[in-house]
Length: 289
Image 1 (cartoon, rainbow, N blue to C red):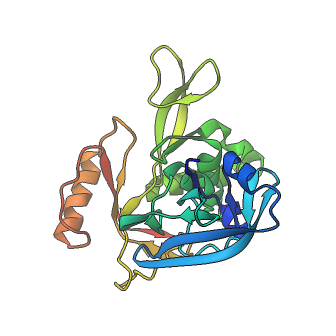
Image 2 (image 1 turned 120 degrees about the horizontal axis):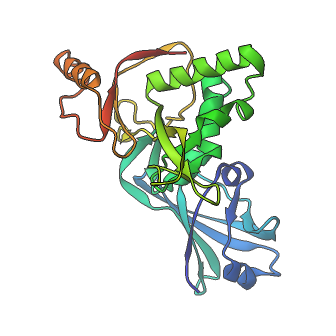
């Protein structure tokens, strides 16, 4: 029986359940309880092994219930699930990253699926959050976690109202996301099956898309300043965001203005000195809230 890897979603963590492979579910079928051994490194460093009793259910699919997930396991984290016949138990194991990463403000210490992070992240109920939610959850998500969504379809999915007021609120929210560097306007296309393509396919019908790319940066190590593992990506109202570098859509380049702003930020020691590589742009310090 081979092991299988799953990316946990928010519902798994909130409901204290773990997906179960079909063949393993057949092995434990009929048992009143199943011993689960969870192997995990807290904050990617301290080894921990916990054993507890669980139950296997099939609603809506094979799952183990009663899983006490550690606090540093985020939506999108991979777990490897396997049967250990010698111990008559189910092994559930996370894999620590070599170095912790911060994805859009959330600290990750274990291997993860970027596509699940994009889908599962809750950007909040602000107007800009509603737009970002539509792009990330309803758009086409690529393997690296980037996503595209037709800008013309936003009014039907953001819940900002109809008429002039709704369009005004939507336009302001999109403009704010553009200023903050969360999204970029690009041109894509649709195929015969309706799937969004970016970059646009030659000869296909084109349309305007909003392109989102996750901001991935090194996270502080546990014990360092800001390295307590509590980065949750939640919105903080009325605050300033320091300048940062963000990846651009394929084929796009930073404008001369952004290159100049990047150089000035280095000279003022607002950011670390490094070359702005092709495919990246600089988002200057701005107010958010």
